[in-house]
Image (cartoon, rainbow, N blue to C red):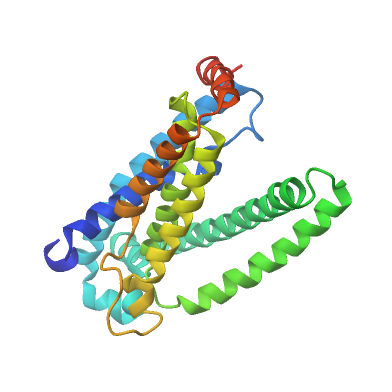
Length: 282
């Protein structure tokens, strides 16, 4: 790649974010709402994981192929510094207008599906997990939940538009890497230790998720991607563009430390049930 990857640490951090972030986004692989039983859900996840892994391998070919066949100057001329037209221009070079139209349609459908899915997931989390479980302590009827979900949908939509405007011109694939870094730092340590470590506790999971989230978001804000490119400061406070190499190990360490310092017998007893369901799917 020559000078395209200037910092090896950035490359390793981005790689960690993409791999571990996928594992930290279970809703991408979750098919329990569209399959009849646990066995079918496992089979669905198996196929989805294979397809995602294959796609990750193909992205290297697409990236370097666009650099060679289309040229970086042509990509920059059509899509600016972000380079978001690279895959579409590559499709036109390889397959003409027909393939360009097909890939454009796929890109549009993918964006629409992702935005709809994330909005639905976010609204459900805000209304059910936060409002009902935390604020109302489980005492809220369905009408109230629906009203909160609608308000949350509008709020998330406005927030997405504001952030979209703020990050206009940034590379979309790189922005996905930042989102995956947050998922890898916030979700993965708690998920993995819950499945594999009997002594892992609820307090450890909360500490891991909170610190992983705060650390990853804070480091992203003070990184060159936001601190320099968006906020126009001269120099970033954090040198790496992706924080996963720092935030993910920190989240694992804090979750383990809190679980060791504050053991919980009931959490350890529940691990047997989780282990049984993990192995047998029952």
